[in-house]
Amino acid sequence: MRPPGLSILVVDDEPLAVSQMTWLLAAEPQAGEVFTATDARSAEQELQRRRIDVVLLDIHMPGMSGLGLARRLRDQSSAGVQAGPGPQVIFVTADAHPAVEAFELEARDYLLKPVRAQRLAEALRRATAARESAEQERQESPRVSVLQGDSTVLIALQDIRWVQAHGDYARLHTPAGAYLLRTPLAELAEAWQEHGFLRTHRSSLVNVAHVQKVTRRQGHMIIEVPGAELEVSRRLMPQVRERLEAGR
Image 1 (cartoon, rainbow, N blue to C red):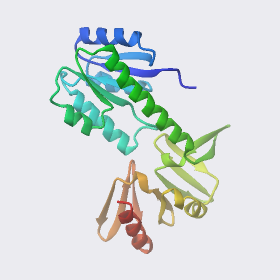
Image 2: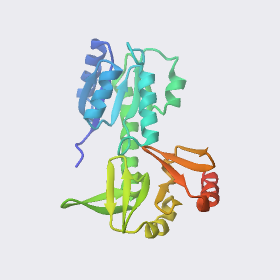
Image 3: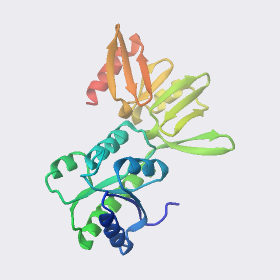
Image 4: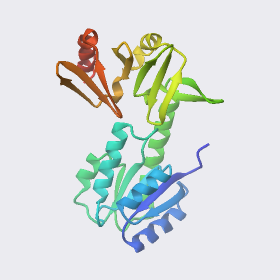
């Protein structure tokens, strides 16, 4: 069960700005736990340590800028480095000029200092709505159950990057790790085709949604997904190429 309210990380190199924001958040019912960081590097450490819903992020800071950190978070989300959705970014700055670049980095909102309580509440409402929508979509995604020790783990098909044949089993590769499913790869290839999985080899399936790059090396087609490079068999090259081009 997730705790009520948004888990928020305030990132700003100015102690007064951090104090003012935590004071505003203390009176904001949409805010749950609040954490702080004074630069992008310490913010990254907090994000690795905790599940954060929203990052209230200053732009101009020593070292890596807020825009640089937001770019990293976007790239990690696109690559599927973390399980589940990444944190939403709300920029909090005294500079209006980088607003266009901020929204290109998929920022949820852009607040100008000094921040008014009403404007902060509006930004958090957007973040809450986005979190609820993402969680609903995740719950509605088809899932498969696998045994891990004495426990049963439910895995959303959308989180599976690729599948590897393992005898009569299949090894499912996800951002959270690999899991064995007692089902032959051939059966999964047929059952999961409608969910975006594509047979690339007699020993592998790939989730098209996780494909990062397709290259040719010495006559071979190579599909790159986060953490792996999958060779496409010559027999399957035409249909793989057709499917990937159709999905562009």
